[in-house]
Length: 95
Length: 360
Image (cartoon, rainbow over all chains, first blue to last red; front, side):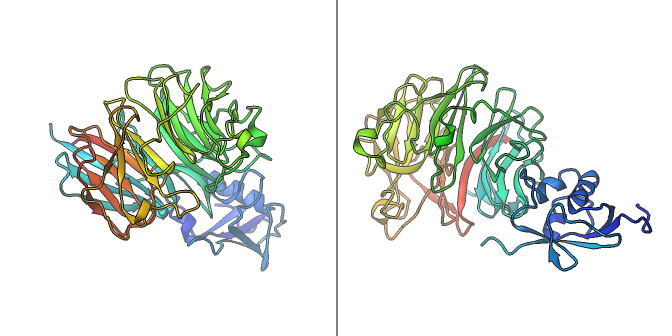
């Protein structure tokens, strides 16, 4: 586990619909990352394949995935301060 | 040894499996699988018994799902299923076919991938998208999709694909170069003097006849066709059918002259069964003559649609024929189409139907 006092450690909250796709994945996880893109890279390292579920080949966050940082929708380049909570959410979609 | 028949059903909300013994009188339904993702095509590799489901989720993108235990558990992967950073993002997987020592996948936007590790990783076959006609390919109502895959049964260097609305393409060099194979198929949606272009046809479904590799059939947006030269030329076989429009086509597992189609009432007329009466149409002479098969099918107020991958046969004796509707009903015949029974209903909209027969 990363050191929670590490200046680049952030907390990521993942949606259920994503968790069901990856055995052993957890709803709340701490990773070392300074941008949202790096969060996805860290998730990929833990659960191979997860980055593809959240990011397309633009590269950009998938259209129906929302990532919120400090109450605002983020992009892959959004910088993260130490201790930030990063919320990954599934948008309203489908029928 | 006793055998088990499985009908594999891809739906807008997951995969369902219907299972029976070879008598095919009573069926048990399992599902939904694949986390209720939209699955455009679910197939079985008869050589390995592995099930594959191709689809795409609005949230999480494209993936190929896999089950090595006849549906009890599933995994998914999209590793390598990309045209690369900065290129078009792949929205979903539309078609799957075992062949040539691996597995092919057709995707939206139209392109072709191959896996030689049972669907774990994929590699692009870029020659198809490098075809000079690529900038002019137009999406149909379902998107710019590669929906039909026909690997040559003996020659690993040959594959036919069908793309809406770009037409049929064929490679003889393992995918490096491709040629359009549309001569003789119409584009009724173009000005009259331009209705037979080299490419741009709205092919709906492409299938191969058993035992004759160069015999292909297609259901097109504008007619039904047969080719006896690997798609170089096509002849209309629509005379005797109630319309020129439909989506699926399915061949008999052993008879090259037998083909099943589901003509619908027309592209601007609702795209359902003509007059609200359900029928599958069968030829036993390569399309020269047709018979409508209605016994057991709804003949009143049946405004059913059948999508391009939702008609299939099984390899048993006599052959079973199956089709799924966009209203979630599955009809089956165990006598080559002569009589029919509804074996499931109230499913989500059915995108695809395939079969698998394995030892029980």
